[in-house]
Image (tube, rainbow, N blue to C red; front, side):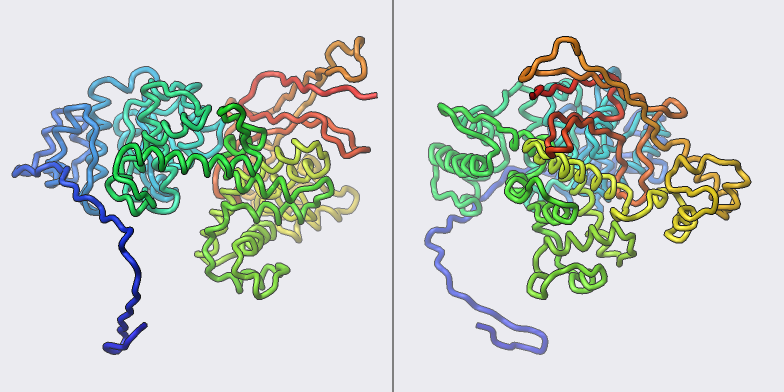
Length: 569
C-alpha cells in the first residue's frame, strides 16, 4: 500500500517471505592502496611514450597505484574505479608495455572491448591519433562483417570491437589462432556484465581464458557443464546463490545446478530443431549451425522455420523478420506516432508489441522518412540486427528448397542496404537523386534511363538531363566507377557423362571488374555500418519453385565455386 508523506513523495510497503533467500557472502579480496606521491610522466622512461601525455606532468592517484603492475609486469588486473578517474590511461600502460617488449612484432595484437558502438568509435578515433599517428601502430575497428573482420584481424595491431562482434569472430579461435595471436585483452565497463547483453560479455572473457588450454568443442552435456565452470556465473553461485536461484551450499550442489540448466537449454535447442541428442552426444542440426554462424537466437530460427512457406511474399518476409526474438527488447517509446506516420496496419492493442515497431522502423528506412533522434537510434539498432537475420532467413528458406522466397530474401537484403522500396527506381541508389529526378530519367525523350549503366552517355547530354553542379556530377561519376560489373562464367563438369539421380558439379567463376587495387565497402550511405560486397550463386528450377543449390561468395573470395546439384529425370 502507499501513503503520502510530503508533496511529491510516497512510501510503499509489501510483505514477502525471505526464508529461502541466502544473502551474498562478504568478500574482502581487495588490494590495499599504497600511500604514493603522484608519479611523473617521465616514469615511462621513453620520450615517444611521454609525448603522448604532454597535457599533464603527473599521473593521477589511480594511475599511480596501478602503474608498476601494468607497465612493468604481465599480471592480470581487475581495475575498479569511478568514472572519470583515468582508467583508459591505465589500459594504455599495458599497450605501451606490449610495444616496449616488442610484442607487436609479427602477428601479435591487442584487443580492446567496448560495451557499445559509440564508445568503440570514440576509442578508435582517440587511439588512431595516439597510437596510429603517434607511434605507428595499426589501429582497426571491427565492422561486424565476417570476411572484412577476418582481414582486419590480420592487419591490425590494436583491434577495437564490441562484445557481439568479438563473439562472432572468436568462435573461430582455432582457425584464426587467436590463442597465440592475442597478447593483451582489454575489457572496458566490465560492470555491464549484469546488464542486457552481459552474457555475451561473460562468454568472450571466458573464451579468451580457455583458448589457452585448447578446450574442445561442446559435444555432450558433460562438456557443457565443464564449459560453464570456466564462467563468472560459476564463481558467483556460492557467493550470491539467491541471485541465480541456487539453493545449495557445496561444489556438488553447484554442479547439479549447472547440469539442470544445461538440460533445460538442450531441451530448448532440441524443440527448435537446432540440435539432436544421440547416445549422450549433442549433435548440431542445420538450423543450429545457421544460428551459430550468424549469431542469432535459436528462438528466431524456430520462428523462421514455423512461419515461412513456399508462397511467402515480400511483405510476409518483413513481418517474419520483425518477429525475431532479437527485437523483443526494442524500446516502446513513440510507437503511436511512428506507426501512424508509416501507415502500418496494426490495431491499437498491438502497439505494445515490439514486432509492430520493428516493421514501422523498417518501413521508414525503405521510404527514407526522417525520424526523431530517439527513433533514429532505434532504427539503427533494428538495421544492424537485420543484417544478421536476413542471410539466416535465406538459409532457412534454402534448407526447404524454395526458390522464389529465397530470391525475395536476397532482394530484400539489397533493399535494406540501400534504403529502397520494392517499387522504387534503382536510380535512387545514386547520390543526389530524388524521386522526381528518377522519374525524369525514366521519361527522358529519345533515351529512357532506367539503370545506372544507361547513364553512360556524352557529358553534355548527361549534364542537361541531371541538371547538377560539377561536384554533384563528380559524386555520380565516382559512384558509377565503383558500381559492380560482374562477369559470370560457368561450366558443367563431366557434361558428357551425366545420369539421372547422380550429383552434377557446376563450376562458376565470378569476375568483379573494378578500378584501383582495393574494393572497399559498398556505397550505402543509408545503412548504419560498413558492408562488404557479396554474391549469392543460385541453381534452381523456376517452373517448380525448386532451389537446387546455393552458395554465398564474399568479395574477398578469389577461388572458383563448385555448386553440386542432383540430376532428375
